[in-house]
Amino acid sequence: MHISEKAAETLHNTLRQDGVDDADVIRIAQSDDGLALALGRAESGDETFEHEDRTILAIGPDIAPALSDATLDMAEANGEMQLVLRK
Image 1 (cartoon, one colour):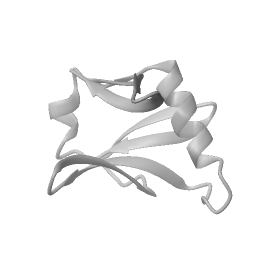
Image 2 (cartoon, rainbow, N blue to C red):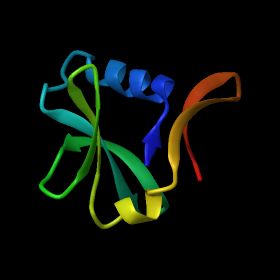
Image 3 (cartoon, rainbow, N blue to C red):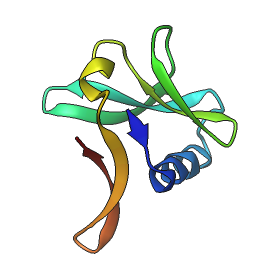
């Protein structure tokens, strides 16, 4: 998986908000509706991504292979910038 610079900055800024622990990361996890982003901790076996000396994203080993060719990026939707996953 790849992360665009803009997406990495967005995740990093999200993790810098008040109330977010330094060890927290954004996780891509399987949900009933597909994939979802959630605040959590990196776990053993996760694929992790760093930005400015902080781990910002973790993907579990169960879904990382399916996302190996994907890119997490930013795109405008309904007048707002949102994270998008492109394959």
